Image (cartoon, rainbow, N blue to C red; front, side):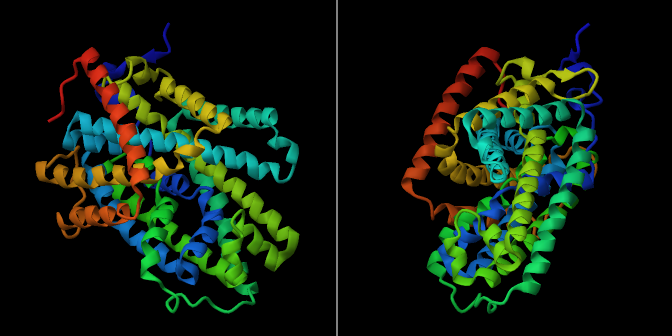
Length: 444
């Protein structure tokens, strides 16, 4: 007896998937896949780029992301298919453009998860250096990805409950850092406005956008979200508000503690800040916090990233086996296992390092596709049931979002654009080959 059923055996659910993700679970997922290991490193990077005015850069990025999230909320309330941004773009702009968006989504998700997984092992190895050796490192990564693979195969409901728990576990220590750091810091308050350099703001924004990037991956399991017209907007705004307040507070407190020295602590700025106010015990505390945060990030990404492979299998781009659903657990088990294996290989080989620049521009191009798709979905009056979320300001918000993305991209280099262009050319060739094999018509 087979343990899988194919896509259309249960038309009451998309491919037999269970709609188990509510507002709290989706918000926790969005928080986890956004707040990863980056916040433990970025304060120094941004301080080196723009100085004491770094909190302003966070607010600018949050405003830009607010426009983008509004577009995500509108699209997510109108399209309830698994694939998230891939599905939005495909329905609005056609199968080819949707495939390019899905390729970018999967590529960024895989490399980011591998990078944070590797950083997780590194943070653990701080307490026991032999774990950084190749064999122990590979074994730890294998255990981590096997653990999350098994958890996700066994059910979306259990995975989201775990994410809700890990969100609380990693949020409380960061709040404690903010409170104790503000109380114990002896340095002067940063001159946030006096040192603002508009010329450096653009480059700091293109760096910081990735402190907020990742929220789109929370939308990939769209076919498993309950009442998406209500759940998606509420969850996204809950997560975005919490993330913005958290980031600005962490940056400000770190600057209060270390002052100009923050820009020099490139490896572990928050660890150094904690050491300055609480000694070695504070440094250990932040090290544990970093490990927990990265652990939560990987758990969230391993819930969402496999659904992109599932969606490709569902739509005939990949072999249909990727769209198989586990008969007992109602999860895309083949896609989950495949994603775990591929992410493990990337993390072990370390080949993802050279894709950092690609991830930079790929995320922004993906956002550009999604904002245009949100406008088109509204124009076509596409909806999945229920009353779709209406953006305040109507079509003006997607236009503003596109303008902001173009401004951020203007700070990128020709080399960065050429790398992304090369990847999209390769993806286009693969799409044409798959289309010729499957003869799947374009979505219009």
